Image (cartoon, rainbow, N blue to C red; front, side, top):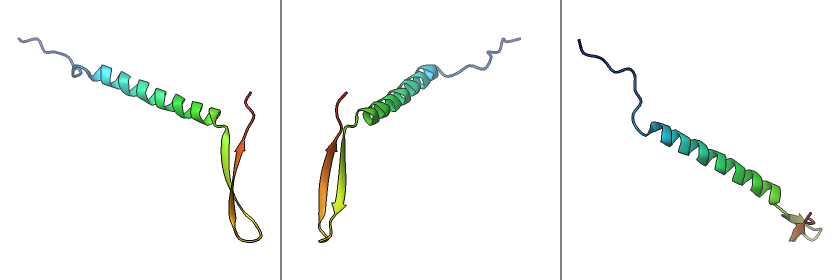
Length: 62
């Protein structure tokens, strides 16, 4: 009788999964850091005359 091999994964699948996890984690941390460091806000304000002004608000740095 021949010995049969058990269920085996294709070579390289574990590395690809690890790379995908690290990439997703890196993306999530980058987005979180960008949101935390955001210091400037643009606001559009319409006055009584109907014109629109853009105001740039900058928060204090800690």
